[in-house]
Length: 128
Length: 157
Image 1: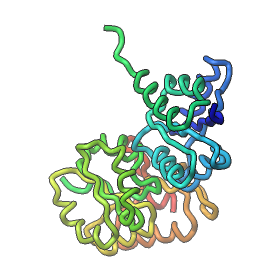
Image 2: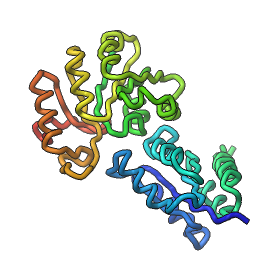
Image 3: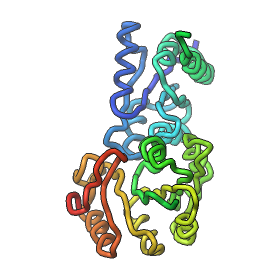
């Protein structure tokens, strides 16, 4: 069994905190997720917030970001590039996070691919 | 069409630019003027990642940008030109006199800066640099998103 992965959710405004709160409401636990907002930050400041939330390397960290082309993703990718044991998935949604918190003990690369797949699977056209 | 927005934004290509301004202006290209990004293929790929395939992303240093401003202005598509800081935009304006208007879109807190607007923090030197830019005839306003009203320079620097 691998070391439990820490999840850091990095988004615009208060979305990250709301997503973590929703995970807690559904599962009764925050599942090792930490919320970070980009509000009021430039890239350097957001990188420092992410590094603080991630904790010391090389503990495994999976970063969830919102917009693929947004500052959160750009900063997360830059931090992850210089740090062992950090991966990034964009397009975070509640389905992705809920799947992640029950599979935090998987190897980091497997958990990353699994999270991306769960997020895609959560997006469906319904009702017709 | 032409360049619709010359913007100073320390996040460069991000949500407000791609979604907010890009969609509103129906931008066909974004020119990112930054010497460090110009030198880093990896960073260029990162900035291209979230931009729709229909929007061309160009990367240039200040000298390259100044040389291409005329072509950008004549481009049939609508363009957005970005710099991360005031100094780079001032250098571009000095080298390309056709740039007559600058949007301050996002300069965030750092030690030494004070809040001027919710999305603009400046040191005294940066405020003076913006006033100096305006003194050359460039119209400088602050506006984070297209639905907001532009704020005149006198209100924040």
